[in-house]
Length: 487
Image (cartoon, rainbow, N blue to C red; front, side, top):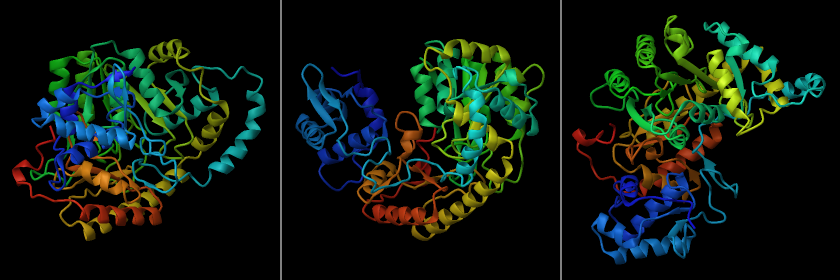
């Protein structure tokens, strides 16, 4: 029996312009799009697809065509016919799962990451000297090791946000922090303001907690005809005023995927609006310190609130982007009452963050500037390489010159993101289609390209992307319709 099902209307929204490019049989185009939705994670494994007759009627095509597409999915291992459940999604045994390559032959652009920090091994060796003392405890602490909580609090204080130890909880990475906050602070049916586009796993965590998402647009600089970029400030204020959300999830610094940073005056306005509505704002700073050459420096988000509004901001951080993705240590900075509430609920899902990893991170945070300086140099080189290579190969693409963060949000000029992602897989590159960062199939004209990879992998991946793009049909799109999917 399938664990979940996707309705016909929901699938139609995800399919979007599935017939593009126009060459080839329609049933293969439908097969390719559903296959990508499964590979991208937009349709979860063990999900029951709509009945052939229902989907055919909704698409305005013959049932024979849909049957042929479903047969291709089944033959390729992407669905299984389950008695009583119809066609249920699966993954082939050696298929990349959510961008993970089990064969080792792919360049994985689906993850915006950096190579492990070279000093990580030495920091781990040094942390072993702190380990014997920790072995005298149970090792089960929902708040986290005191030495790391002190280091996190000191880091916030140094950056201009005075923080005490009782305002900090250590988590198993930033995603765990998002999930825990959503589970504890949201009730089913509560509204949550989110950015569009945004980090897809944040959408998933909020939806899993029962939230109704209220999207507000963020546009990357240089990708729209009207020259506007950043947050829709008016739309953001209206979202607070009209929906009285319980929660807002924002990435104010080096937003993923656009790379934008929120102006100081808008930060103040958001905190004021949130306090007026009783909304808690989660500010995700996972990439917040990955500055390349931003003209303006910013304080941590919560520092922009006054005495009456600062308590409405909850900070999330981690070392997953700055040090190494495999070092699963993050943190939450919030008012002590919220930290205590989170701690009281935490043991239902996990028993604490691994101790040795916490000791390693505490060592690194005591002298974090060398880590950030190295990352800035690496990202500058990667960004400039991406801009140069894409400019040479795709002069029609609009490539933002980001000033920080781990990726650039590229406008392809045509709604071909999903086709490009599929074609790239066949050439050994895993890249996530733009709609993965949106809701209801938006952003087919965009694709996120990471800038933090080693130059050799970056160049090989972009070369393969160029070969992939050459196999697609680039139908011209009227300028007035270029941004119809950005809402």
